[in-house]
Amino acid sequence: MKKIGIWDAETGGFGWYPVFLREMLLFRRKLLKLGYLFSAMVVPIIYLIAFGFGLGKSVQIKGVGYLGFLIPGLVAMSSMNNSYTWVSSALNLNRLYFKTFQVLVQSPVTASSIMIGEVMAGMVKGLFASSLIILVGFAVSPDFTIHPLFMTALLLNCFMFASLGVITGMLTKSHEDTATYTNFFIMPMAFFSGTFFPVDKTPPVIKAIIFMMPLTHTNILIRKSLLDHQAMISLAMMAAYAALFFIYGWYLIKKYNE
Image (cartoon, rainbow, N blue to C red; front, side, top):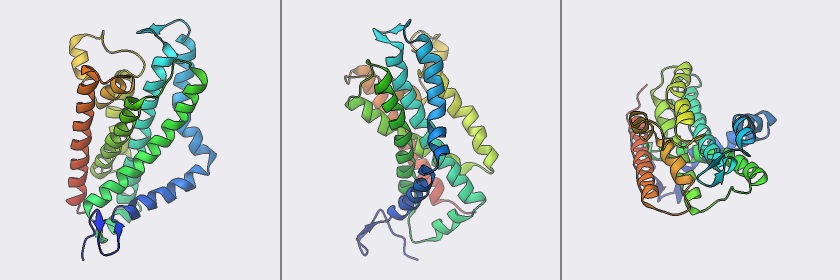
C-alpha cells in the first residue's frame, strides 16, 4: 500500500491533515462540555489565587510585581500540561484499548504525517488552555504583557511537549504508566523550573539539574522582552529538545509493531 507523505501530489492534500482533523473533531466535542473548560483552568487559577493574590502585593521580583512574574510561568506550565497530557493519554488509549492507532498506522499515511498531525493537535490544545490564562493575566495584572519572544516560547513549548506526549503515548504499556511518567517528569518540572520562583539563587548542584529541564528554558524565554545572551541559550535548548523529541517520536511510530 502506497504511503502518503507530508504532501500528497496525487490528491493535492497534506497527509497529516486527516490525523489532525480527527483530533480536532474530538476536541470540538469536548469544548462543548463545561467540565473541559473547568479542568483546563482550575489548576492554574488555584495557583494564581494561592500564590499570586497571596504574595502579589508584597513581593517584587526583578522590579516586577509577583503577579507579573507568576502569570508567564502559569502560561508555560499550562501549555506544557495540556499539550503533553492530551497527546499522551489519547495515544495510550488508542493503542491499548480502542485499537484505533493500529488502523491508523496501516492506512496509507506515513509515520511523519502521523507525528505531525498528533503534535499539531496537541499544540492547539495547549494554546487553547494557555489563552485562557493569558486572558486572566490581562485582567488581574497591569505588569503582564505579551511580546514576540513570549509567543515564540509558547509555540515552541507546545510543540516540544506535544512531541514528548507522543513518546510517552508510544512507550507506555498501560494507562497507569502514563500517570507514572507525569508524576516523575511533568510534575517536578511544573514546580522546580522557575514557574513560581526564580532559580538563580538555588544551590549550584540543584541549579544544574533544573537547567536540564526543558520547561526551565521556556520560563526564561517567555519572560524575556529582548533576545539577550541568556534568551539565545534558552531558545537553542528548547529547539534542541523539540527536535530530539520530535525525531524520537517519529522513530517510535515508524518502528511501531504491536
